Length: 414
Ligand SMILES: Cc1ncc(COP(=O)(O)O)c(C=O)c1O
Image (cartoon, rainbow, N blue to C red; front, side, top):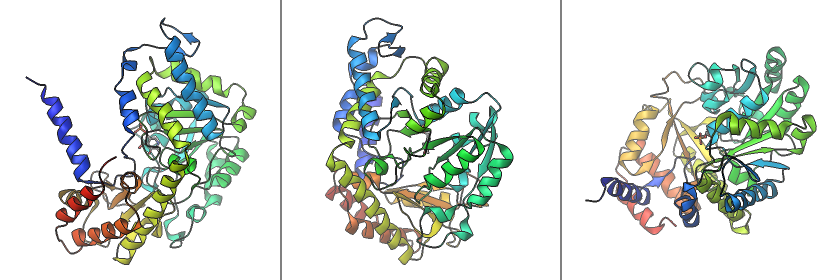
């Protein structure tokens, strides 16, 4: 008898083909990456780093890891890259454990304001429990509709928080923030208080590589990125140290490497690292720039269509690949909206909005994005169609499932 797990995989593949994947952190990777990730590389133990392994048999493995490292350094223009973190959360942990003593202070963006759990969310995360955490916020009432990211932050307030709390690391990075990240302003504050600046570009990495979001390289000391989101790679993460970081602390690269292994991890997932190497090569091609540009164009059209159809968006729109619909005036909460959309084949996630009164299991928002739809080849016209569908489902309570199916058929998963 065949293991039922294979039937479940087929069902999941069908679901991914027949629904609109609109969770902004999800994407379809390349067939070549899937081949590498399912390859014999997963059999090999390679604790250590190229040329310094604790196991024999790593002559070929070393070449694979070195290729991934060299491609990351070249693509991002950084002097040091570590490709071993298993995913984004352990990569952020490695930065904290590498550069901080337990109990020292991290300052990051609050979860409901667009930050990630690992940026110091209190009580329930390692970052909030084993380090002292202070959290800054975005300034919702100050945000003019359709304006860029700089206006979302009150830098004087953030500076005062930094001067008072003396964080050793300031984290700038987001998981549900739709605007351009103002690297320079944050780096000035970090310099003034003597903090390291960690840029977590997990969400926007594809846009940074594609030239449609400013790169943090001139401003940050350390950069972390997951590889499975807008970069279209396998699950995994990159940790990079910039020239600025090395100038501040010539041992920084060593500290980060030691925190990854042996500090937090054992054997690297060589199959994923090979997939990352393939992804980095693809991301260096002109086609990827086109893709990244289209992701942003699509998000702008989608957000405009939603606003025209009466939806409120956090910060009024988007500059990047995602947007958060603020449902507080719409008579439906985040959970209900996400469930209703899923019934119609539109897969999103409930998401807290700034100053949300609903608990995280309910929320008052829905987060959506365009990376996966753009991978399927959808463009502005389709975004308008999809924006209309949100109105039909959430406001007019109509069914759009047949339209979704038809759209999915027209744009097959590559
Ligand atoms: C900004 C940011 N950092 C870190 C992570 C954590 O990555 P992972 O889910 O791979 O642990 C995420 C994932 O959602 C993220 O959005």
